[in-house]
Structure formats: C-alpha cells, structure tokens
Length: 464
Image (cartoon, rainbow, N blue to C red):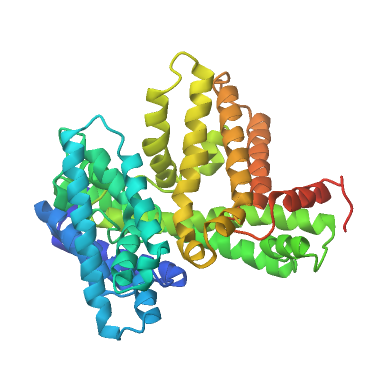
C-alpha cells in the first residue's frame, strides 16, 4: 500500500479521494471568515507535491489566504471596517497589505528580542502591546485620520495573537525556524480558526513529511481520518433526526427561554434536551476539527487528531485532553508549564492548583476574550466584563473539576471493569453537560439565574 501510494497514479488517486471525501463534508460548515473548500483542497495538493520545498509552499498558501480571499479568516473584520469607514471596495487590498506588513514587523521585532533574551516569558510583553493597541483604538485618536491605522494594528494582533506567542516560544529553541517560516504558520490553509492548529512552526517542523514514504503514510492516515469523519457525520445526522422526530427543542433554546421568562418546559424534557445536546456537540467538534487535520495530513503534515476517542477518557481532565487537543495544548504550553515551573515549587498541590487555574481559568478567559473586541469597542470595557460573569463562573467550575479529577486519577491506575467504565463515562458526560449551562462567553443572564435553572432541573426549585 505504501509503495502504491508513492507512485504517480497512487498520489493522484489519493488527491482525488481526498477531494471527494472533504468537499461535501466541509461545505455545510463554510462560514464568512473560513477558507473555502477549494482553497483548502488546492493548498493541500500544492503542499503535497512540493517535496523538500513544502515549507516554502506553506508560506505561499498562508500569504495568499488573506491577500487573495477577502473572507479568509479573519480578513472579514477588515472588510467590515472598510465598509464602516465608507471606503471603496478596492481599498481592502491595501488594508490587508498594511496589516500583513505590520504583523511581519511586530513578529520579527519580538522574535529577535526573544532570541536575545530566551529566558523571558513573552506573554506579558505581548499583552501589554495588545492593551496599548486597544487603548489607542478606544481613545479620541481613533476618530481622526490615524483611526484606520490603529484599527488595522488591532486587527493584526487580535487575529494572530496566539500564533505570535507560539513563534516567540519557538524563538528560544536552538533549532528555531527563521522568522519567515514563523509567519508561514500563521493561519495556514488548514487552520482557519481561533485555535492554532499545528501549534506553530516548531510543531509543524517536527511533523512534516521528510520523504516520499513518510508522505504516503501521512496521506493514507489522512484518508482514514476523513472516513472516520464520514462516520461521525452519519451519527450526527442520526442524532439530529432523532431529536426532530421526538420534537425535542434544542437545549440552548430551552435555556434561553427559561432565563428570559418566556416558556417553561417540563423537567423531563429539559433533561432529555440537555443529555442529547452533549453527544451532538461532541460529533460536531469531531467532524470539523478532524476534517481540517485530515487536510493537513494530505499536505504532508502528520498532525495529531483534534478530537481523539473521548469515550476512552478516565477522568474529567483526561476528557478535556481528548476533545480539543490543540486548544488544550495552547493553554498548557503558554500558561500551565511556565507557571508550574516557576511558582510554588515547595507546595506540590498548590503548585498544581495554581497552574491549572492559570491555564483553564486565566488562559481560557484571555484566549476567548479577543472574540469580544467588537462588543468592547461598542459597549465599553465595564459593560463587556459584566456580560462575561457567566463565563467567569464556567472557568472556575472547570478549574475545580480538572484539579480534583487529577488528584483522584493519580491514585487510581488500575484497569477499569465494564461497570466502572460505564459509571466513569456517565459521570464525565454529566459533569460537562451541566457545565454547558454556563458555557456562554457573553450573556445578559448571570450565573445566579443559571443556578436557578440547575435547581429546577434537580427538583430543588419549581418553575417560576
């Protein structure tokens, strides 16, 4: 099979099979700000054929994204900005060039500083510069001629902040890639998301195919993953049809109507909707995340799966590791490990708790808060923070669950019986299902109202 996949006919058939499997699955998830299916397919084909020039081809496809496709993530923000300022359509391209130049300048400058001072923690400096950009946009200067330049700089930092952080993390390594390859990993063709799939240049450098045999093995694994995505698509369609057949409302609709005081559903219906929403969201995450990983493997990058066998989890923390690998690795590498290696070395449990809080709490908030920049510019900082009270509570509950589950799992290493496996999975799924009641980044309803809904679910409180 490997020998056939390295032949000309085999490589052509693999690319055609990838196109036939990828296109119909990805098209329903096509939204403004995501790369189109043909852009991903063509980029994967070019990277697979580039051979030893794969890194250069990745750089070209990455650069072509924001420059040639106006809706390529996250150029939609610049497009809206140009429309709000009353600029003609042809002004978008110079704005994109300006943003790319600003991004390259800032990344290169910080990259050289990091090479000079490898022991420093780069995140504080990045957050400081981000805060300066945000303060300038909120200042009266944004109303003047410089406003467009300030908004462009803020866009660049909001869109590529975590990618810059991974580039600076790689800069402290003796085997660090040059600055141009760091830029080549900023939203590559398979990474049109706020989650940095690929984890920067260091990870992609280690994971790219080195010869024809490793490329063939990588592409075959990509086809296998896409076939698994088709199975997940069938399961997702079955869950949706079952929900529609049972006339079961979506859980988000039930929750919002309860919080708004419009409709109060029976308690049994709320439980059914809550428990059905969990596997449905899990299949959606498996499908979209692993579709992009499959595209990366076709291009010659042997990346690990975004969602990997969540039914094999043994604890709350283990499940969190399996359902969103690249998001988990982002907060671990940028928050957990630096804090764990620096602070409270004489108090092991406090050290573990503090590192978990910084990763799943502070890092989680900082990772998602940039999605609220439009609300922050429109409503102001205080109103935006007030709307995030529910998500603050979500992060605290998640941190507590991760900490106590790690304490328990470290004491239990023996194999689980079938009954123990079922009870473990049931408790994990129930925890994350109930945690989903608080999983809303910005909401007019605070955590107390959601606690009342949980009390109603458990029978401790009647319907209002």
